[in-house]
Image (cartoon, rainbow, N blue to C red; front, top):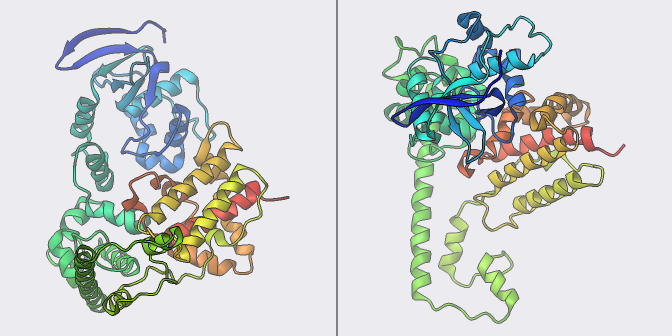
Length: 466
């Protein structure tokens, strides 16, 4: 390969072919094929792509074999300039660019000697355009070719093309459904099983954020559906009535739960209307002291309620109290002094305040805490590796942390709790990364608590007092 200067030829409808040095290309970490959240280098992405555990998503060996011994100029990567600097982000053609980088650098990983990249030019010809055009090219090339599964396509359309948040996306956010049951990740399930009509027949409320039922019951339903796919529930059987293939007792419990949800929602609406009417008809009380102001503002239990109607309304309101006996982080940790210990102690204190209902605005707490878990683990990782970051830390300590849990007196109970909430060394990285999304995607309290238990063991291994 011969090095050279960057050059360009022609411009057509906002697109031009430009020869760009490989060192100036940045791989797209949010590639729907295998998205990564956070700060990752090209080497991080390459390591993930050539990891044999991810061959199903990347299929680099298959591509290298199909390409033969040289790069075909008919398939140019699509790239966009990053701000005003010299670098370009690769939106389409990441696999080809990875093969080119492997060829240039001689990047070696144990067990990957059989991967022989084709010959590539450097600088490399690329289609340079704006981001919108690049995303449209990505959609056009991958939308109907089977290179993405349904969930990955849904995420791409939602994040970049203004598409709706689909049922598969909601179920992944609520209970980790696609991660736990990959068999759900098909167009048939999305369009035929999980369409609005069929969800209603199963006893769900499709327009509600939580489908109108508790997460435990929702999980039971999805697990039952996953177990029926390919046998009793497929394109030939029960396609027009998937509820008929499911246990009747389960459907009955779902519908009863949905009715209770609707009744509670109606009661909450009436309470809010009553409270609003009172706030408009009654004069605002004058506080005698700053302490009294705060008590009225946050409705602390110590303040007596004078109005009997208001007492009844408060009595009817459901309190958001978790019945789980599991302690955050699996119990107190004994860590070395420093940033990691300080962050851990802050998160522990915040969680206990949340559990004791000392936080008034509780709705957004769990996803914010989950973001804190990610920041905590990233900080722990940064103290061990200059490069590699969160993934390296999880790879090094998650499985060992699970093993350590078994050795504890209450270890089996903790392992069962962690497992029941679909948290494992294999998916912990993904769960931590999802904490960077909008809060609605990470509201599962039980799963977040289970994550903290595993993270607690990892921190004990990496930062525990000797």
